[in-house]
Image 1 (cartoon, rainbow, N blue to C red):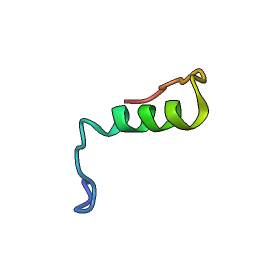
Image 2 (image 1 turned 90 degrees about the horizontal axis):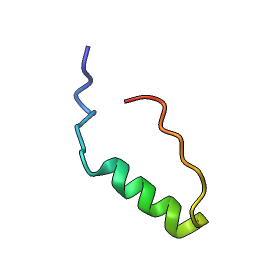
Image 3 (image 1 turned 90 degrees about the vertical axis):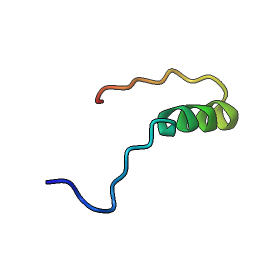
Image 4 (image 1 turned 45 degrees about the vertical axis):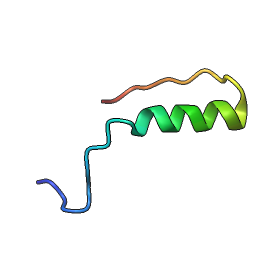
Length: 34
């Protein structure tokens, strides 16, 4: 069942990776789920 407060945000993963890169440099990032 879908929750009403969850939304599809296609740019979300890109923003998260940009934040991690700016904050921590270039650590290895493993994406294990879709």
